[in-house]
Image (cartoon, rainbow, N blue to C red; front, side, top):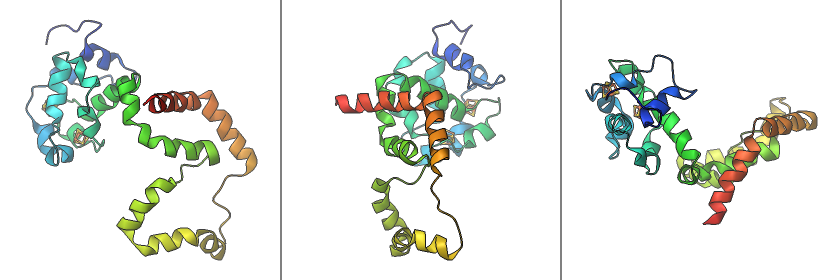
Length: 194
Ligand code: SF4
Ligand code: SF4
């Protein structure tokens, strides 16, 4: 790839505030070492080398499809890249670009109940809709612990896990100030348009 132009995807990635100053995106030699160490590539059609190729080819459709949502940020690709590139970091930037569009907002709507727990209690507790799966994974012991959590905490002389009202108010103000509430609203608006 020659000199990046301002509307090129690669240029935008490199200029993003989240990009490391020495990110080796333009130095990618398509060696495939990232692909060979990527657990997501092992279990799906996803290939981190292809992500970088598409960015360097200025393929903006990357922001519209599900490809970039297969990565789970394990950073293996980051550790093995011989030229200091990081597909993991590039993916984080691409996802943020996609989230600025409706397509990306749809990809993260399943996290809204997690956001709701922050808004309701100021804590990132596990949303109830995941309990069924956790019960499946961990069995009845996990369920029993959830039912008896308050008693267990009392027995261990632990205070309530929930925030004091003043702290809850502070968290609420912070969530407003950092734009969290506004972002959650925008994502829910897209979800509710369906
Ligand atoms: S390991 Fe680095 S240089 Fe090799 S294909 Fe992946 S990003 Fe490119
Ligand atoms: S961070 Fe993403 S792209 Fe990199 S190895 Fe892990 S799953 Fe693959």
